Image 1 (cartoon, rainbow over the protein chains, first blue to last red):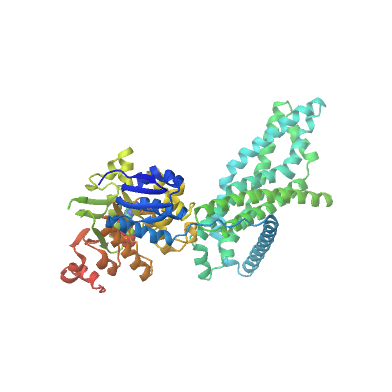
Image 2: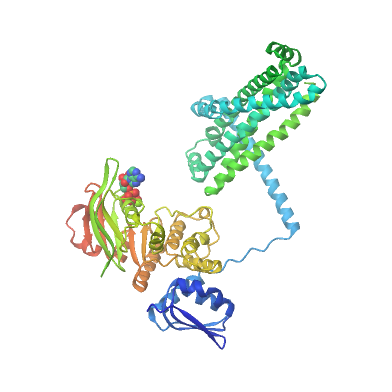
Length: 360
Length: 248
Ligand SMILES: Nc1ncnc2c1ncn2[C@@H]1O[C@H](COP(=O)(O)OP(=O)(O)OP(=O)(O)O)[C@@H](O)[C@H]1O
Ligand SMILES: [Mg+2]
């Protein structure tokens, strides 16, 4: 019974005998397929498992060979069952690739539909905001507080660290060329304006995108995958009001604060470097007072709030449109972070032009 | 016939809570052994003890002569290649399609070339009526289809023992009957042993050679034997209520 399976080729016919189990099938699969037999003789097979049966059946199918079943009744039964099973499972045909023009067309259509869906989401959120304006008690304040805590309080440490490093690096690097002109005294002006107007909000936005946009997307994506979002909406809960608004509101409120933290720690870092270059803190402060006006700060903070809106929107949308399966949640988190960063940089460019025109 | 599974005085506690104790039974080669009992009485837990995922609080369970929980290395791999498990929730890998899911145990335990694994996986899916869904991801199929794919994966290696946790829950009567027929023919023709957890009375009576019934309040086995005999002769009120579908 444990006689190992063998196969021999005579006149283009493959003759099998002995035990054709998964080990034997694994050993001879490639050989049998290469031999391309015109007939398969399985009469002498004493024991057959499903792997062996699939070997016989696939060889017969691929080479259009006739298959004589085993004489052994049990082995014959296995073969018959697997034959039925394989017949019910046709090999998967690769879908033909469309030609480049069709592909381009499909891509354009998909892009257009994506744009429409984005606008629709914006509309839903606007409607949610309007509804909340009329019925403010419907907004889940506890949720807003939770997200403020998660996005804000817990992000302060990172903001302080990155802000201080940014200030130190900026002032230190600019001190090298400035020294050539003896213009180190202008470093506070340089670092102050670039931090308050640009780098503070931008750094805070990148932190929020990495910490919170991904968290929003993963959380909402998991809820979508587990059909919790569908369950909420069939209970008559306005999902935008319930899930999206608290997060967006938290992002908008928290961003100026994060930017402020980056600004302050950045300026402190700069003051530290200036101190090491021999400029007292009072001088640095006087320089800042003279050259940097509150408009720079406020403009930066307004910009930060707008970044927060974009990050919240993108994070929530990425989560809510997640497909199925564990991979979908990961994809949603990735696209939330990437989308937020791209949106923030593009917005920053556009806002720079607008502020410039407004003479800010 | 020799027992392929021996459970002796098994007990399981989670913290203070005893799920069951003094559970002993034998499963013989080639039989279809059914584990019955109400929700939460410890059926899935018992299954996990048998396959060595949990360590029992007392007693031991031997599968094919070995305590699976104590094996390591090559002996463990070998023992695992001889059993197949279908989980209550399907437990398919979400990032692989059905064919890849079913082919995974073959990749681990056999030297079949990839094209052979795919053909065999297709055949296994065909056996459970999923022949046309091989390229779908688990997230793209229904709950009943997930169960059947889980069964196909458990059967991937023609295991000697198949553990099925509620295979027919959530399936329509026709599919469920088809599954019963498949289990019976595999058991009769290839001598595969089945340990099946199920609530489906019809399927218990149709396929079960022997059964044990667990009970939450008794914390152990309250009935054992041929299900048809139990239906006709049981005196324990809980067992009678179960087999006669009475509310209690
Ligand atoms: N990891 C765990 N920690 C604590 N308790 C557990 C754990 N797993 C199971 N239990 C408890 O053990 C008991 C039995 O659980 P088990 O999943 O085995 O039930 P079951 O009989 O399979 O029920 P069902 O028919 O609903 O699947 C339950 O009361 C459960 O709360
Ligand atoms: Mg269970």
